[in-house]
Length: 572
Image (cartoon, one colour):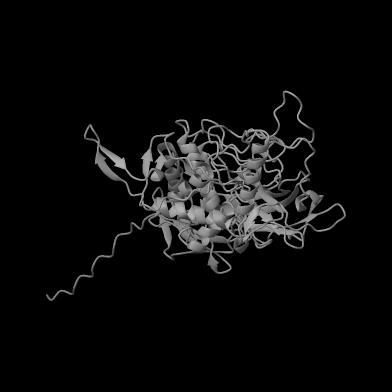
């Protein structure tokens, strides 16, 4: 969250009273219908993720606190009124004003997703709604010209003390905390999610969660994974709940989405309205300073050392705080394969088999409710269904996490899918997968015109072929065409018909050819040298389909046409 969660409070009775109120507010926020999952995170009981779900059950934010302010009831539609200089000034709800750079980032992310995943139908207003709830539009637009926040926006450390328990996954790279993760930036990504969801939205070669362009594009991709169509209410709800799994969060975001859809306007950076109420306290937050929370100490504070702030806002007790309860993740000793078959697919096809991984304790017992992250490694364009290279799956009651289906790209060769436990340093489990080239088993000419040419001339017709595999169109199949010496000698001929390369030079072997979407391929024009005779063009495909085409080079028939037979003379 944008707010500073470790507030300085008055000492003595005032401290105790305020801390008690904060705890009460936190308890109140867990309204009926809200439960806690295996990691101590709040979830909506009517939207609790199934242990077998293939979505990222960890949520983008780690279910960190968020702003609960609701939009005003009046219409946000701005109406122009003349200024002293006669220039129209936009008048409308202050809440409808979105800082210029932040608004630009949302709209650019929508445009990018329209090209990358048009079926997602992502509206920029959804990003604005989430940005409002997560950080108050980057603290009212306190960003630099390139979209980077002027100071860090950090949520509370997720140490299980009133919040989720997510141990450090980034070595403090993004949140400055090497013990526990914290949500980071204007869209509040936890480091473990940013590791795979992060994007470069402003083209500077970096993926920075503190940059609103990067964060907005990352949020757009996150919301569009799993082939969700956000014009469908069910998919829209699922996408929002995957960002922070709380029914109250869903309702708040939907309220802002509807509000922004009715109208918005741009305001200068740094002048946007900043929310005041949060899901963890219900009170106003300090949005001017970054969180500087540290892991709870197990020793009393010493003179000259500031005590670590607590989520409730009070000073920590000098007594040793209780350790957070162990989570299922803490009991995992290693990952084991759960019967994954050989992973092979033809380029462009979906892998028939899925990866199954089991989380196991040291004693060999299966562990349920553990997040397993699957990451595709290597120089490949193979992805999981939905177009992502990373998928996080929660183990089911048998301790097994089944990765989404792999979709082979066009790059052939070997790749690796690496399984790791989110939030625990155990050895990764690698799965080898192979993408093979597209093949054809049959190749035929699409026409039957005889291919003839005079010496030194040009063949009038071009050869066109069609490839099939098991009677189905074989598209994007590699094809080679060679003018060979004879059907019994596949050596490239050194005379007779030939093709021309881009420089007009003679070539008798063509490679790098592929069939089109209909399995067809038209070869370039052919020419003939001065050698006459019958020649063979051999066309082959990946997979072994072969076709021999006969070519004839012969001199033009120059014999005179027969003279007409003179009619018999009538004279005697």
